[in-house]
Image 1 (cartoon, rainbow, N blue to C red):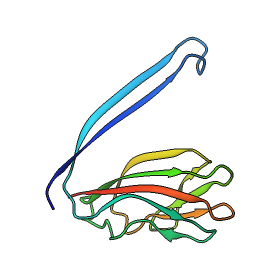
Image 2 (cartoon, rainbow, N blue to C red; image 1 turned 90 degrees about the vertical axis):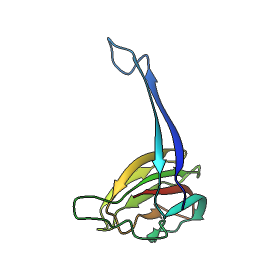
Image 3 (cartoon, rainbow, N blue to C red; image 1 turned 120 degrees about the vertical axis):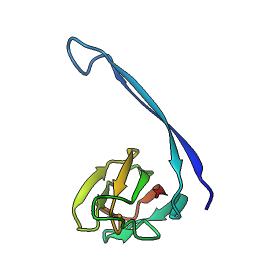
Image 4 (cartoon, one colour; image 1 turned 60 degrees about the vertical axis):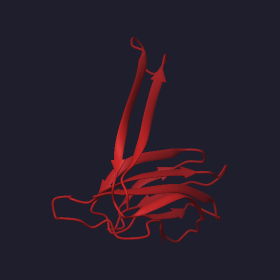
Length: 129
């Protein structure tokens, strides 16, 4: 599969988070996506049992040689989404409307479940060799 570029911008700001300092930070990067495991922007209905969101294992070398960028958003208005790694360790809980974007390495799976009912998760997974 041909290389692709993913342009990422992250901004965070607040005028009242800290008493004496304002926070205003923007970081941008152009990430090269050159792996075979590219799962485009997808939605999936969840349940209270874990389901995998990646199509193939992200396993690489023992020193974290294989990685992927993962985006997920909780599109629900009521229930939380709970994310776990391949060791069933919870690493994120997204309230309604919240999202994350992070790099991950050497996970054979990324799992998601709902705190209740059947909310929808929106996600994107892009592997880097």
